[in-house]
Length: 378
Image (cartoon, rainbow, N blue to C red):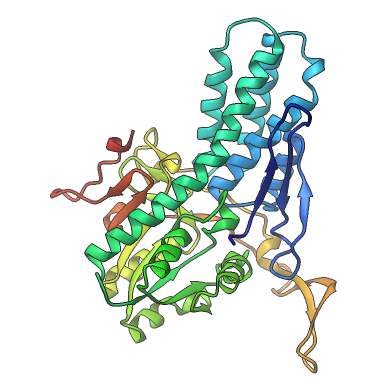
C-alpha cells in the first residue's frame, strides 16, 4: 500500500469535504496528519514545507480552497462574489512557493474555469470549482502511474531490456510529493515491478534532507533494495559502481527548451552523469512543463531561510542504547555562529545534459539538432 501525503474526503450529499495532510516535517519518526481547511492554512503548510513536492502542493492548495468554499457557501451573495473570492485566494496561494510551476498552472486553470461561469447563484461557481479540484487529485495518481510505465519502457529500450541495473535519485519524488505513486520514484517503482531494479541509491538532499527523511522512508516502506548516500558522494559512487545506468530526477519546472529546475544538487548530478556515461532522465507531469518560460535562465529560483543550513532538527538519539526518543525533539545549531549563508532551494539542469523527459503523455527525446519538442504534449 502506497503512502499518502494527502487524504481528502470528497463532498457528499450529507457531508462537507475535508482535507488532511501528512506533516512531512515530522517524518520519518512520526506520521501525523494535520487538518487543512482554508487557503491561509494551505499557504502556511506549503511555505513551511509541511507539504512539499510540486504536484502535491498544487493539489493541496486547490483542495484546501474547495473545502473553504463549501464551508463558507452561505456567505456568498452570488456567482460574482464567489468568483472574486476564488480568484484572490488562488493568487495568494501562488505566492507560497514561486519555483514550482504546478501550483501556478493549477491556479491559472481554476481561475479561467470560474471566470467563464455565467452570473447567477454562488453555488454554480462553488460546484464547478470543487468538481475540478477533485478531478486534479484523481488525475495526478493516474498520471504518475503513466509516467512510471513510460519510464520503464524507455529504460528497456535505452538502458537494459532484461538485465537488472542500479539507479540514482535525489530529493523526494514519490507518494509523499504527489497524490500517490510518484514521478521519478514512480519510475523506480515501475522498474522494480518489472524485475529490472538491482539497487537504488538516494542522495540525502541537504539542507532539508528530503532524501534521508522522506525518500528513504518510502523505500523502507516499499522494501526496495536501497542505500542512502550524502550529496557529495555521487561522483565517486558512479565511478565505483558501473552497474548504475540511470539517474532519474523530478522537476519543479521544465522550461520550453527542456531546461529543468529541480532540487538543489540536480545540476551537478547531470554533469556527473554525463561524464560517466550514465543516462540522465527527468520525470515530469505535463503540468510541470512551462511553455511560457523559454529557458532555465528565466526560472525564478526560490531562496530559503539561512536557518535551514545552520541547524538540524530531530529526536534525540542515544549513543549507548541506539534508541531514538521521538518524544524529545531538539533543534541543534551545527555551523559557526555569524557565518554568511546562501541557500537556493533549486538549480537548473540544462537540456543539453538531459537524455529524456518522461511525462504521462509520452517520452520526449532530443531530435537530430539536439532539441526537445515539448509542444507536442499540449
